[in-house]
Image (cartoon, rainbow, N blue to C red):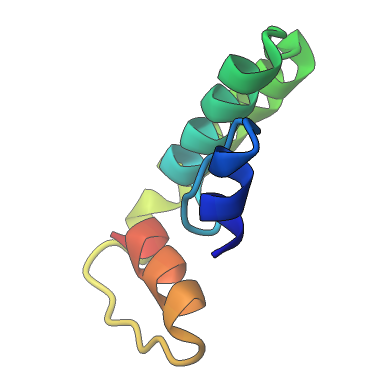
Length: 84
């Protein structure tokens, strides 16, 4: 209802899931950048690079493991997307 109301009064809106993980955070930041017209700061790009590097380094320990995810459906969706 809030998104519908904001559109009626001319406010720019966006709807997405929790920004958990690299892909979801990228989508969130790109949408914020699009709405505000501002560029994403280089420091965030540096942090993203470090995260991707850390994920690549930990792949050997995580590959082939089984995970159980439980909780609020929105959060479960975000965590499952991250784990995949």
